[in-house]
Image (cartoon, rainbow, N blue to C red):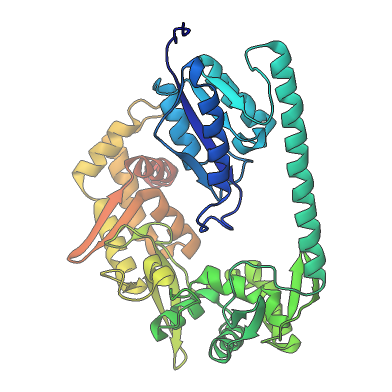
Length: 437
């Protein structure tokens, strides 16, 4: 007489391989793991074990993280009650991290799912089984950390020998047989960037010029300011290999000379302070940080010189980063836009509705001003404007204006009522003194 079979236990097989090497073979490591687990399930058929049709195979995924697509699908099926038993060939196929495995065991226990490693016999439902599990996981994590240390040591030794150890191939080189070979066309661009940066002393201006000329990086994208700074600081172009800040002679040929490198870095040394301060002094920008183009992207102050004359502009950051043609309005004349904004701002000081709004803003203050006092104070600012220093004018603009949007058919200006209130308060002593006189 046969023993009656109880409820069926749905079994899911999980397989994993850290690298993609060999996965294209007809019978690979994942297939071997799954075949062994299926054989184990067949041996437990008398206990009601049946294999679920879904496959949970993570090829080319590390066991040091839970961010694996097949594992996520398995956990979703467990949470939804579709799995009763999880089988793996070996414990470290599920995870090499003790902390991650503890999280998985917590999910298994909450969902009444049994975990089985077919080559390591233990039962996670008992305290001794959990102890055995933790010991095995500790050794798996130790093995993973030792392997990591070996890889890092090998990488460091290879870099000291000047070998290329992977990563993005820099502009100016091609990769062949794991070695960097000079690409003559791109190398000419790299040297040109070094020379022009020394002449222009501005990565922003250089990026704009390169964008107009259609110069692209290794991936076919426009060269922006950030790319230029990375290129200027990449010691690969000196024929060196760098590991953790230390440079070693590389196997590849240099593209730039030491003299050209030093001249460029002499300019870079001053760029954070001196060059930026000089640029700001030469190009006062009242609307810096306040002006935006039709696409909502900020516009930054810039300038150019022609025949000894300075021309100032506000240039869209879209153009700086992605090249010409990406914004409906790439640049506007600084003098024209600033004049238009200042004219509207000075006219605003005489508008009754803004005077009333300012008075309402100040009503709850201890030293509130009357509507007449506010009007007199704001009217005082208009004749004073031309007597203010540029820094004082910029301060007033930032108090009064929240944002300037350049449109295809004009400009929109968003004003700060609270800023008008502060200006009126600051100008009140001047008004009272004139009244007393």
